[in-house]
Amino acid sequence: MALLEVEDLVVRFYTEGGVVRAVDGLSYTLDRGERLGVVGESGAGKTAAALAVLGLLDESGRIEGEIRFDGESLTAADDDRLRAIRGGRIGTVFQDPEAALNPVYTVGEQIAEAVRAHTDRDGAAARDRAVALLDRVGIPDPATRADQYPHEFSGGMAQRALVAMALAGDPDLLIADEPTTGLDVTVQAQLLELLDDLATDDLAVQLVSHDLGVVAEFCDRVLVLYAGQAVERAPVDALFYEPKHPYTAGLLRSVPRIGDGRDRLSALSGTTPDLSAPPPGCRFHPRCPYAEDACTKHDPPLAATDDSGVHHAACLAYTGDLSGELTFSVDVIDDDGGPDGGDPR
Image (cartoon, rainbow, N blue to C red; front, side, top):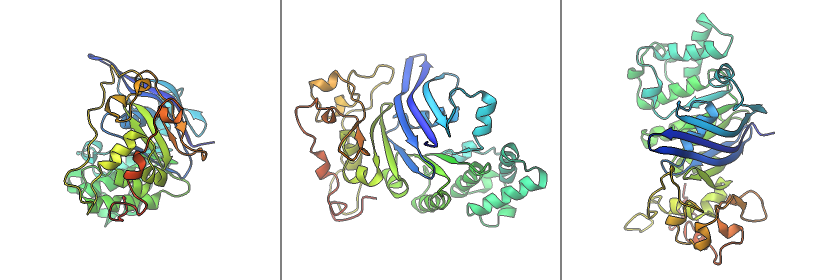
């Protein structure tokens, strides 16, 4: 049994402009110790799906479908049960530490509060645990730093503090939503190294990111979202070297690479659709260079792209409904890893 099972998830937001289906029929699983990357453009539904798992959607959000964690239904759980699981068995790292940390409490107090809420430690024991967690995530002189306020931490240190807080309840699953956003590349590398050290056989990680390089470096499998739907799901190497969906191929072409000889970066034409009134059929068809008439009428399911059964894409090419063949994968990344033989990661 998978640690996390998401089945036919729908997330609707009721707004003045209409009902927005931010997530529409999403299904995936996450095993213990696995690292799953969830990627896509802004508005693809990455964060909405993560917040649905955590039960943190705002009042305008509504959920349909089923979310199970270690066999227990989270969609059927009451608020008290969700609070016990969230921050306990499921830790969360948000992208903006300035917004996630309370400026009027010391960092140590905030971590100790999480410790008290999700363990049997209290008082000095909770404080000692907070210091130990700061030490675990690589904060120098953790006992002193625990008494400092968030504004006294650099961006990278504040993000490490959020990781320490997420670990307070010894979680089985860590959901990291754009944890490297706004950090310079050196600090990004340090944070990924930290997450790599923490992601043991017992800790699963769902990494939400728009940074394909980060996902390639860290994850085992990748789930690509477009306009609220999954369009590709595959092991990380298979997806980066042999993408099977035109949208994924377009994303990979848009990644700059040193020495690739291009004067301009490749870009996907068009924009993401309005999710209050998405186009009929395949949602990517208005931007797809391979679209045929059938694509405007049929919404393709995730289908196996080969006999291995581990690589899936939502394209009519894999259901036998396209007259042509997709040939884009050969010019995304060559056999040597890139135009000049560089690793795409």
